[in-house]
Length: 261
Image (cartoon, rainbow, N blue to C red):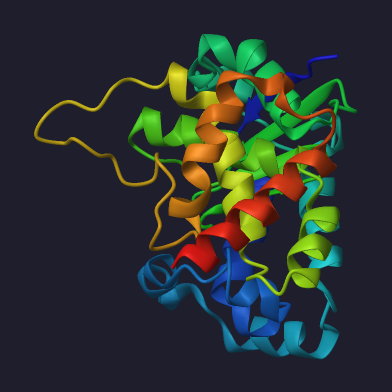
């Protein structure tokens, strides 16, 4: 089953994230140093901070963990327009940004590479301009809009990969092998990149490389050690029977590279 991708812009969701960024010091630490750490947005809107609201939030501490924050944010995404949500997707033309292949070929390839079926018939994607990056949670995605549609495609593919990649078994294997646990994030991005690569416009000289499209070794650890392996895997998704087989090969590849070095 391939899910439908629904794009939307919501006033309620954007206002919630706007407040979360402006008062990020009162939000869960993982978020405050991650997707809410948008210093440019925070600086540009600093005049909108109010001490009274800060004190109220400090007293309430409404989100003791990132889990509660995500549940609240995605709950806003799922609210019906009749319940007060101002969803603009049917009026704003944002749905036109859903490029043709995303509904079939990209999702099918990503599912094949991640060795995990989609378990939902609908994925909600919300554009949220205050976020520093984005998040994928259960069947919802929230991410910042980019002026470059090719980067936006890759960004969306990354968040889709976050929804479907079995991270837990990967992290456990990395920990057991005494490898950098952040390599799990590298794997998510490599799965995303190779699922969408053939549907991206080729860079034009002098912009031979577009930042944010091909996994960046300065941001994702062990990209050089895994890239060729994933390139071969993307050409033949039937290489592994399950995700665990892929994980074993990832660990073996990195260990071999370490020995050679």
